[in-house]
Length: 122
Image (cartoon, rainbow, N blue to C red; front, side):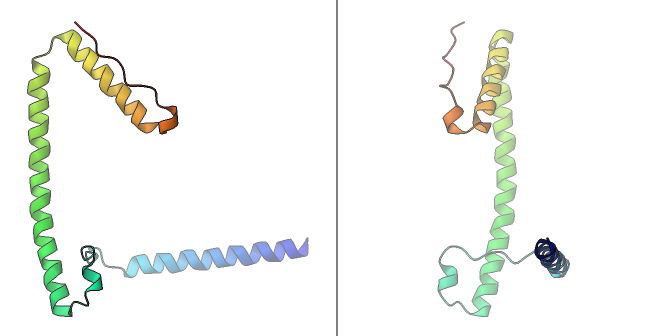
């Protein structure tokens, strides 16, 4: 019993020390971490100057890409709304059901998923 108690105390103290270490690292780490270099660039022995320039390029394009992704999302929503506006109330209801079923299937493992529903003629 004493050995179990010693082992449990050791594990608890190690765990507490590890968690404190992680917490201290989180406080010291910068809010905006440096981006990672693209695949294979880290293997090229780039100079510090090149590395800084690469990070600047990544940051610039990341901001532009983020803005474009927002625009694409807005366009897709607009397109979907216009297409749904053409449907009858029954078709809209069936579309919603199909989308809900697809969401449920996507959350299940593949082994539990059934075949996709058949198309309905109206």
